[in-house]
Image (cartoon, rainbow, N blue to C red):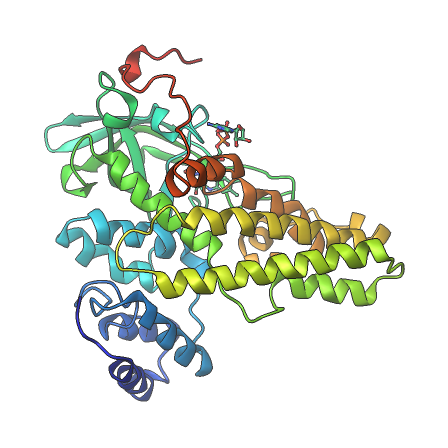
Length: 392
Ligand SMILES: Cc1cc2nc3c(=O)[nH]c(=O)nc-3n(C[C@H](O)[C@H](O)[C@H](O)COP(=O)(O)OP(=O)(O)OC[C@H]3O[C@@H](n4cnc5c(N)ncnc54)[C@H](O)[C@@H]3O)c2cc1C
C-alpha cells in the first residue's frame, strides 16, 4: 500500500476542483478517476492511489461540499459490486477497459447470478457456458436482474463443468448485453413497476478474454461480488437522525393519533437506526484494502430490518392515507431517491431490502458460521457432481 497522507489527498482534491470545477458531470468524474480520487484503494492509474480506503471519506466530503455528490444510484451494480470484482479478480486489460466508464456511469452494469432455481443456493445455477474455439456460447436464463434493461455489460456466473461438485464447476464472465442472443424482459413488482428483469441467453457469446478469473474458479469471483454487495447495501452512512428515520419523525409530528404505542415504536427504531449508523462508521474505520469480510452481513441484516420496520411505522402513522399510493412507473421505482421521498412506495419496496443481496436467513447463516464460528449448516450435496443432483 502507498504512503499517501490526508494532506496529499486534500491537495489533490483542491487541484481537481480548481482545474475541473466547471466541467459537466461525466467530464468531472473522468477527471476525478484520472486523478486517482475515484476509489482510494484501487491501483494507481486505475482510479485509485493504492491507499487506505478510509481516505476516501475525505474526498467524498470535500466533493459533496463543493456540490459534486457522487451519483452512485445510476450505476449501483457497477460501482458497488462489478467494479471492485474486476479490481480483485480481473485482468489488467479488463481493468483498463471497464473501470473508468463504470465510475463515470457511461456504461451501466448488472449482476447476472440468480436463476429461477438458484437464488440463495446460487452455486446450484444451471445457465451453461460451453467453450467453442476462443469464445464461450451461453444458454440459460437469469432472474431478478436489477438494471439489466439499462445495462451495457453484465457480470455473468455460468456453469462450465456440470460433472464436478456445484461450487467447482462455475466460471465468471463479462457479457455484452447489447447482442442478439440476450433478451431482457421486465418483471412487475408489487409497486406496479420495477427495476429488475428476467434475462434469457440463446447462443449468446463471450470471448474467452472476457472471463474473470480461472475456468472453474467462478465461485471465488462470485464471493468477491457478494461480499462487496453486502457492504455496499449495508454501509451507507448518513448524518444522525437523517435518512428513513427522519421520515418517521416527520410522520409522527403530522400524525392525527399520536398514541404512546407509536411513540414507543418510533423511539426503538430511532435507536436501531443510530446503532446501524454507528456500526457503519465503525466498519468504515476498520475497513482494510481488498475484498470485504463476512462482517458486512451484520450491517446488511440490520439495515434491512430498520428499513422495513421504519417504512411500516410511517404508513401506520399516516392512518388511512397510508393505504393510498401507486401504481408507480418504472422510472419512479428505478430512481430510489424518489422512492425514499414517497412513504407508500418506500413501504411496498422495503421487503426487497431483506431479500436482495442474500436474504435475512442467509445473512444469519453467514454471521453464525463465519463470524461467530458456530457449526456449519449440514450440506446436502457438497461432493456430488452438479449433474447428479436432483432438480425440478
Ligand atoms: C430488489 C431485488 C433485486 C435483486 N437484484 C438482483 C440482481 O441484480 N442480480 C441477481 O443475481 N439477483 C438479484 N436479486 C435476487 C436475490 O439475490 C435473490 O432473490 C435472493 O438471493 C433469494 O433467492 P430466491 O429469491 O431464489 O429465494 P430462495 O433462495 O428460494 O429462498 C426462499 C426462502 O427460503 C429461505 N432459505 C433459503 N435457503 C435457506 C437456508 N439455507 N437456510 C435458511 N433459510 C433459507 C430464504 O431466506 C427465503 O426466505 C434481487 C432480488 C431483489 C428482491
